[in-house]
Image (cartoon, rainbow, N blue to C red; front, side, top):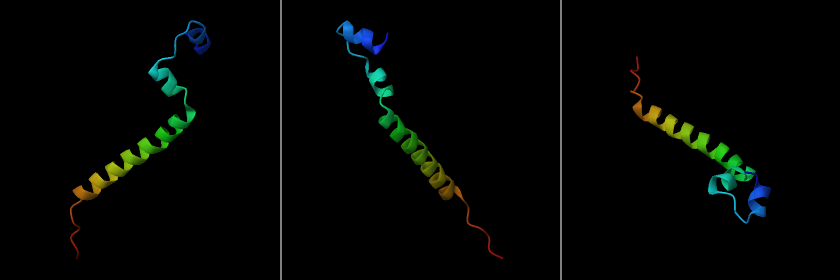
Length: 55
């Protein structure tokens, strides 16, 4: 159902529809989620590294 049909029937769009219609929120999530996931991934890899044996 389109937003215009929902408005003409007096119904508001659902939470997910409002969420996905907000381009700024999607932009922020598209930047924040990969940044946090790669940062956490990098920290886990860093802590799991064994110290190098020096010659």
